[in-house]
Length: 168
Image 1 (cartoon, rainbow, N blue to C red):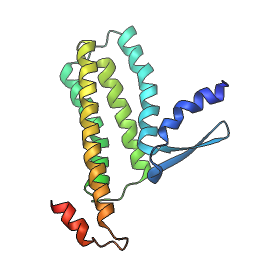
Image 2: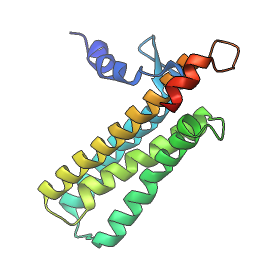
Image 3: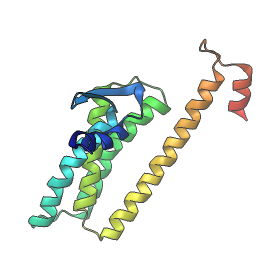
């Protein structure tokens, strides 16, 4: 396998949402990356090494409350952005905001992973729990959006059948 294929293969995971994709060009290939994920993976990769260095080679020890609060606030920006656009439909999204929210999410995850002053087991188990909660919220949003799409007859009005499905 060539080096460019080795680098491009994992990047294909970012191509899961064409509605708000950011086009990037690598090795002459075009990748339409989900904007939030692009920000999260990029900042997460950078912060992985940065915070690993801080954890392994410095004596900087941050208090639990500082790490957990900062991580929660940074990660919440992405959740709020996503919910207000995709679930509540109270605003239009932009790729610049999605990328910024993703960057904060990547920083949040690596801050939590490397600098939380708890055992590795605690960190890993709580990250798994957070991801399960995020998946559950995503499934609710996907189900709601699918119901709204099915309820529409293409003119923006709901069909009678769609109204029955929504209220049952």
